[in-house]
Image (tube, rainbow, N blue to C red; front, side, top):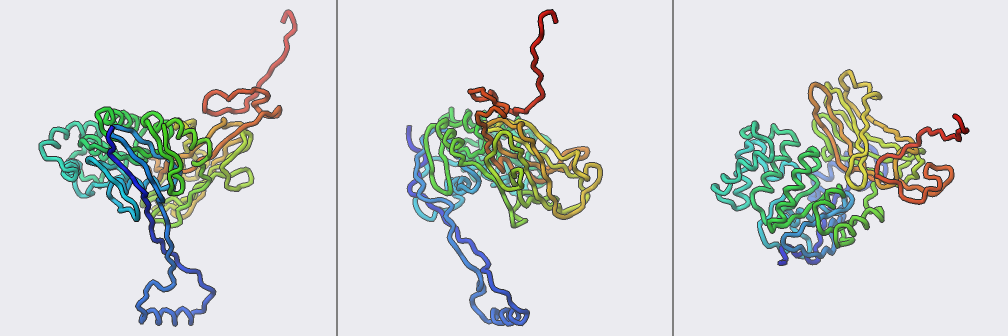
Length: 429
């Protein structure tokens, strides 16, 4: 098989500015400094710049019709790598050689003009990919049908929900015959049925001799779709090999464990004009951030968010997902929230969900959260897939539910401690 992508010594760095910390100053000092700066050519006085290497020394090759899964925890460099492969970002060092037409789906709305209709954006994206109008005409009905937006084809996409946006964006990227299809975790915005539909389409694309590069935190999806895997860790290539071996390495070494996520800048946090996230955490029984638990330990999930617009009856929900991507159970704050039956005020809020000990089974658990308005319809405001990930383990112990049972507990679901009664019955009873 011929090589379609070759990455050699790839590196990408960014300059990050920080405000330098200064000792206590008086009002007179502040005024004097402001006046001085008016006559200074250096308007960035007091700011410190540092280099951040998002990618370092990355080397790999991808063959024609391969299906490559790229995995790694948040911040590992996955999205940066895809942007370099998609020619959106230039590398700082190294080179990337690509043979073939590339279609990318990296973020909701990438490549779409919000003022244009769905129809107009289909033709715009086709033109960007170098397709002639008659070629796009042949694919148009198939794209609209796959995206399930027949009623909204001539509606400006700025009025689309995030799910409609993703459905159309994927349909365009997948159906306009790219030789290389690059898809980021953006598919997580869609519903489960559509995700499975997309996975099937990507598999068909690879069978047609085209190449698929897929980034996801869903190990089940990676395992089903991909033949080879790549692990990124702190901007470096940690491992490359067949997909099963790579997933086992990733899960076995806890490379994906995440105990806390914080978004200090509100405009960069997940959410919209109604709700913006601030932080999510996994806490132990002492309220400390933790990623490793005994099966008998209680686990708490904490969410902090800001309500920016009043007049909404908000509901927070958590999805507990196992390492293969299967949803174990869902919990909602319906019974605890005072805004279940009335509109929520603006301000900063904290929600805490407690999972008792002796409930979760062994394995790695990831958390998906969602905050939505509940009414005649459900309107989502903020959500992130696999935002947290922790591990539950067990040991042979007479005091535990396992007792002296030596094998792995079957299925990756819950494993509650339930009330049992065992007694010996006398003859004749």
